Amino acid sequence: MSNLKEALGLRELTDKESGIYRALVAEFFGTMLLNFFGCGSVVTENVLTISLAFGLTVAAAVQGIGHLSGGHINPAVTFGLMVIGKVPIVRGLLYVVAQCIGAIAGSGVLRALSPERMESLLGVVSLSIDVTPVQGFGIEFFLALILVFVVCGACDSAKNYSKGIAPLVIGLTVSVGHIVGVPRTGAGMNPARSLGSAAVMNMFDDHWLYWVGPILGGMAGALIYVFVVGPAKEEELPRRVYATVATAEKGER
Image (cartoon, rainbow, N blue to C red; front, side, top):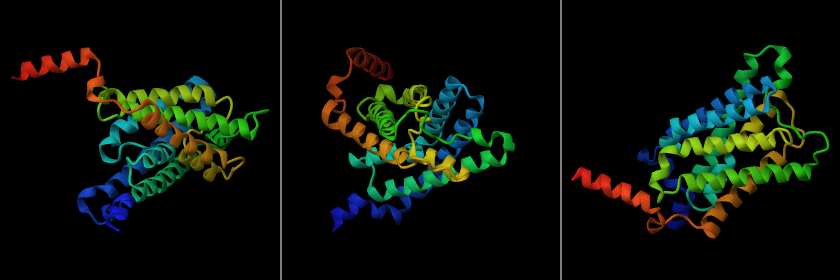
C-alpha cells in the first residue's frame, strides 16, 4: 500500500514541504501567459512572428516557474514525464487541471481585451484545407514527440552543463514546431493551450486530435529518450566539459 501511495504521490497533498500547491499556481500562471501572449500574436497572421511569440513565451515561463513546478505548462510534457516516473500520478493530473484552467483564463482575458473584429484571430486551432484528421493527428503527435524528447534531454540531471540554457532550447523547439505546424493544424502542440482558445470561442472542431495526438506523442518522446537513446551518464560527458569543471574546481581550491 505504501508503494502505491508513493507512485500516486498522495502524500504530497498533505506534506507542507512538497510545494505542490505553489507548483499548481505556477502552472496556472504559466499557461495563462502562454495563451495570452502566444494566441495574442495570431492577429499578426505571420507564421514566423507567431512561432517566436509562442517559443519565447514558453522560454520565459519555464525560466520563471521552473524552480516551482518544473515549468511543464503543457499536458503533453506532464504525461510524458509521468509515464517515465519523473512525476507522480496525482501531481501530474493536478498539473493538467491547473494548466487547462490557466489556458482558459489567458484566452478569456485576451478575448475581453480584444475588439470584436479580432475574435476570429484569437488562436483557435483548426485543420487547414485538405489536411485530413489523420494527417492532423500525425502532425500533433510528431510535434509533441520532438518537444518532450528535447525536454528530457535539456533537463537531464546528468547534463549539468545544459541546465542554464534549457528554457531557451525548449522555447526554440516550440518555435520550430509552430513553423511546421501552423500552416497545417494551427500547431496545438499543447492540449491545454488548444482547449483555452476552443473553450473561449466555443469552437471544438476535431478537438480530440489536439489532445490525443500531443499526449501520445509526448509519452512516446519520453519513452524513446529513456529506453532507446538512454539518459546521459557522467562518463559520457564531453572531455571539454570535464576540463572546464576540473579547472573550476582547482580555482576554488
